[in-house]
Length: 160
Image (cartoon, rainbow, N blue to C red; front, side, top):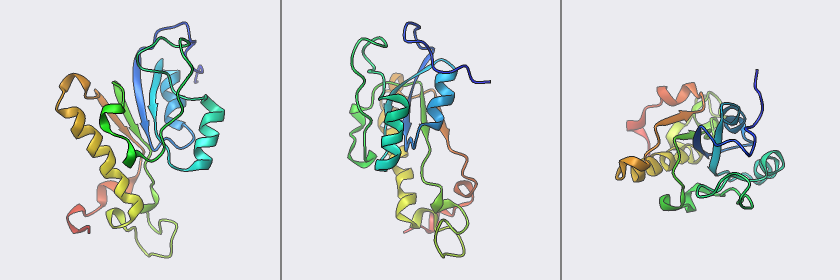
């Protein structure tokens, strides 16, 4: 069973960043494991509002928990420069699954995958990972993606 978030007086076991955070599903699990969220990004205004109600922000990377007011989450990840994403041990991404699932919330008989504009946000995840690759000590130790079965079956070579 989940024990809830780590008390502010306890040092985090690891730091994590959330891309396409939604309302914070990954955050609930990772905080229960002793992690501290140092960056979060979500473009949907309703999801951002719920996230803020649930968590109130993210912990500043250069301070101890409770030392400073928590910063707001980032919006559109396309507008975030990789240098502004603090060091983190784990990077999570709950990107839009509609692009990679059958029907995808549309009348299409099959998923559009990377041909769907929503599916293009996957490349923002790759962009951030590549940027951190040039400085190995800044690259996350693990990447945790939402379980989207159609992502692995997508024909990336036939995208536009």
